[in-house]
Image (cartoon, rainbow, N blue to C red; front, side):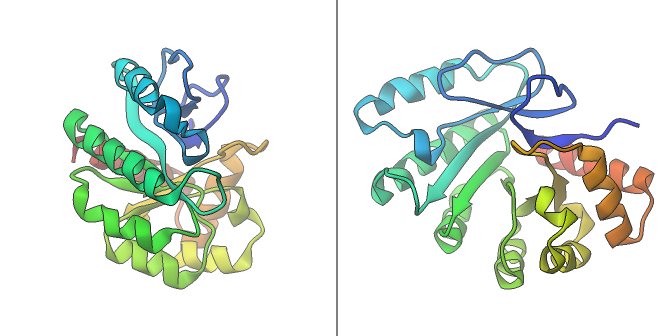
Amino acid sequence: MEFFDFHHHKKSVPNGIYNLDIERIPPDFPYSIGIHPQDIDPKNIEEQFNWMEQMIFQNCFAIGECGLDSLVAADHKIQEEVFLRQIIIANEVKKPIIVHCVRKFYEVISFKKKAEQAMVIHGFNKKRQVAEDLLTHNFYLSFGKAVLYNLSLQDIVKTTPIGKIFLETDNEDFKIEELYLKVSELKGISLEQLNEQILENLYTIKNG
């Protein structure tokens, strides 16, 4: 059985969504493309957007990572402008958005009304209240390695609707199968059921 890795940085993993780094050439399997908050270059932002828009080829599954991050150097106002432009691009090309967020969840929620496409918070590992607020605003949550050992996050996974879940390795060195196995145990369903649901979720965010 193959397991879909929603967000990863490994070109050796074709069954998933590869995160394309800034100003690189896309692979011939599904990828996401975006301007990460840490990569924003205010002096060359138009060139960055030109690169991005020119690289949205057939295998582009999603726009991202993009979002807001309180720990990077880019000015917050510029981050918001860049995030909004990418939301607008996603609306135009009809692709879901993979959101990177660090300590700016409620600001990200405020942008949700601008998005016509699904928004997925990648690498979610915050508190229950944040998860509940995101789910209330119709975000999807993608969980990573922390689910294997973080008990409070495991409790969040248990109560998160299965139709709103994705699983990812991000840039961690472990097998996605381990995460699928753990989540199937937490949800009390078979690996086959979990795998089928993830694929259904993918179809939903891709086709609206």
